Length: 501
Image 1 (cartoon, helix red, strand yellow):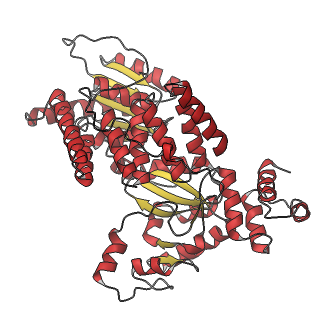
Image 2 (cartoon, rainbow, N blue to C red):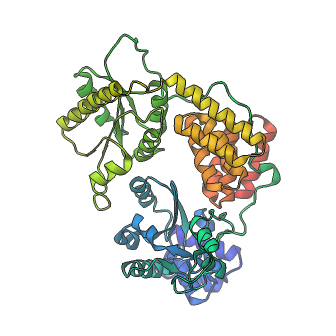
Image 3 (cartoon, one colour):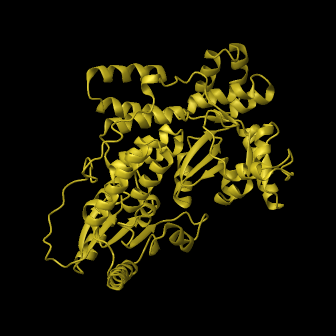
């Protein structure tokens, strides 16, 4: 009997959702984990809700009842049908830089990494019953191929259909302009209230003391360059040296050594990093002339690094050469190059002259662009502008104008995406507004820049728990335990972890 079947069986017995005799009868089957829960629900041994709750507890993420959802079929553009069928995964909601998916086996993390890479979005998995997921994948992709716009689950709530302006078959109905606008531009519902999402009823809820707190919101730091745990020191370089600096980011040491020898032999200065967060810290501290960036990295994918850099007024001018052994069945290299916003995309294994030509073109093109744009502000001016955005956001927040505060802070992150306090305050503000997933995204970025700030880590733990992602919440609570400022706080976190786990 494999471990996943033991886990599901134990959970069901503890919840008194199945008798020991029934469990003994079904455990002889070869089905494991999700297949077992799905089959028990189909047989009527347990309800679908109980099966989902058991799966949610096993995987530490929310379960999703696919019979209750309404899916816009244009979301399926993000995932080819063959991948959906092979891995039992389907997109259910896309919001800006976030993607929510239903999965039959959330432990299959490789497909999540691949999906984050090719879409540039942070993927949040929900677990679903495998039989329901198989049926939905087939019907949803078939409907899309026939030109339909929606997939509607058999138990989709009426209010959801009204919001989308459709009937139970997915066909449009005559609705008011207000309702149609709400369906198109409505805000994302909280995870616990979203139709179709089943949250484990044994999940320990955050106490009042664990709610998202200010953590110093309103204290404008004079230094927007707060960072923690540098990836290591690099030698100081005289301002008189004119050699261009190339940052090589790759977690394969032999590739880094080869590129270093290749570039230094041609007179370039080379910095290197083997992790995504280390690369971002180097960019903030040294602003290299060109970045050679591997697409798949520990911590933060190269795709996300490129998106942050290219979306920044302060760092967006830096040319990026992305290299990767790309999953060929998903996107062509040219598509990836365009979606990343990078200057070059080179597939591994690459030829030396491909890298050299790309670097030289980037250096010459960058020099020409700067010569044609004498009004480009200096880094110090942009730091001052970012600080003003933070101060304006704090002032708006104190005056009770939350949306205006968000706008100011967002403007600041566009100017300097590596300014720690901008992401911290924006995350805390999103949390107060109930925009949980946006808050999580900003606090993740803040911790990526300063990994040892206790309030940020603690609030991220609270937010993951509120969203139903128990494993991620536990991971963040454990990190906050190591950063706790005093014994009383450490004791409180330990008690909370015991209740959570």
